[in-house]
Length: 512
Image (cartoon, rainbow, N blue to C red):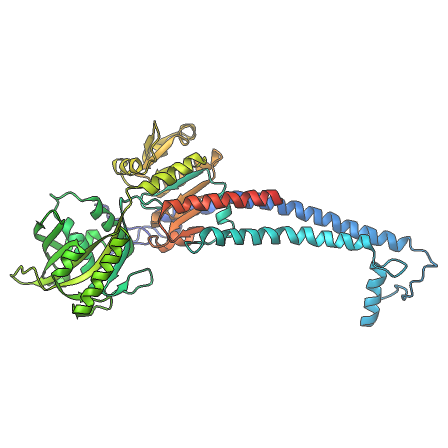
C-alpha cells in the first residue's frame, strides 16, 4: 500500500500523524506543474492574431510618420502671402482660442479648408490600428455565444475559435465521451430535482450512496453496465467514496427478487462512529419499489409520510420519464433489528437512466475522423478497460496501437516521435506521461485539445491548446485550468464546437 499522500489529498475521517517529506515545487505535483509553467503555450489562433496585430502596428506607425511628414512639408512650403485669416503660429498658445487656432493652422489648407489628404490619413490610421482588433474581438465573442448556446462556458475569448484548428483530441476515460452505456439524466429526492446547486442533507446523501454501493458489495455478482454507470455518476456527482463504504459496510445477505423485474434486496451492517446499524436496502424499477414505500426523504433530511397525493406525484414523474424513453430506478431502505420485513420502506431517491449504447458517441467520433480530427484515449486506467471502452465508442482503427504510459516514457526521443501519431490508447498514464505525450504531438505539428475531469489531468488540460472539462463532473482545479467548460457531457456537442470554430476561423481569415 502506498503510504504517500499527494497535493490536494483530503482527510475524510480519523486521526493520525503525518511526516512532510517535500513541499512546494519539490513535490511530485510541483514538478509536474513547473513543466507546464516553463513550456511556452501560445494558442495557434493567438499566434496568427499576434502576427496580424504586429503588422497593423507597423502600418499604423508608417501612416503616422506620413502624416507628420505631410504636415511638416506643408508648413515649410506655405507661401508668405497666404493669409487664411488665422493668427501666425508663433510662441505658445496662451488661451483656449489660441490653441484651437493653432490646431486649425496645422491641419488646414491656406484657404482655411481642412486638408482632405490629412483627414484621409488620420481615418486610415484609426481604422486600421483600432478597427481590426475591435472587429475580430466582436466576431469571436459572437461565435462563442452562438456555439455554446448555454450548454457551455468559454473561459477564454479564443477558445471556440481555436477548436476550429484542432487536429487531435485526447480524452480521459470519463472526460468528454459518454463512455458508460448508461447515463444518469435526472435525480430526484422528494419533490426536488437535484442539480449542481442543490444542497442535500448529509443523512440523505449517505443513505443514497449506501443504496447505490451496497448491491455491488457481493463480489460473486459481476457489475452490470447499469451499475457501472450509476457508480461512476455517484462518485463524480455525489462525491461517493467507494473505498470508505467498502471498509465501513459488511454484507449480511443479498437476494435477487423476481429477476424478471431486476429487483435486488441487500441486508448490510454499517459501522458509523463505532455504532453498528443494520439496514435493508432495496433497488429496482421505480413502480415496484414505490409500492413498498410508506415514507420518503426530502433533500433537507425530513421523513415524510407517503400520502395519496404524494404517491400520485411520484407516479406521474415516473410516467413522464417513461414517455421520454428513460428508465427510472428507485432506492429505498429501512433500519431494522432482527426483522427483515420488506414493507414500510423509506424512499431515498429516483434516478432516470438513458441507455445510450454509444450510438451518439460513435457517430460523433466518426464525424471527427472524417473531418481530419483523431480521437485518442489517454488515461491512468488499465489497457483492458480502455480497450473495451474505445471499442464501444468506435475509437479503434484497423491496426490500433495500445501503449502503456511507462513504455512511452522509456522510449528514446526518436522512438516517441515515430510512434506518437500511431497511438490510439495510452493506458496507465501518469500526469507527466500525459504532458510528454502532448508535447510530442505538438512538436509533430498537431493542434491538441485535452478533455479531462480529474485533478491529475489539470497539467495536461493547461498544457493543451484547448483544455476542455465537463462542468457537472470536473474538479475545481480542472475547471480552473480549462478553456471550455461543457455543461452537457455528450461528446457530440464537442463536434458542434469544432464545426462552429472552423466557420469562425474561415470568416476571420477572409476578413484578414
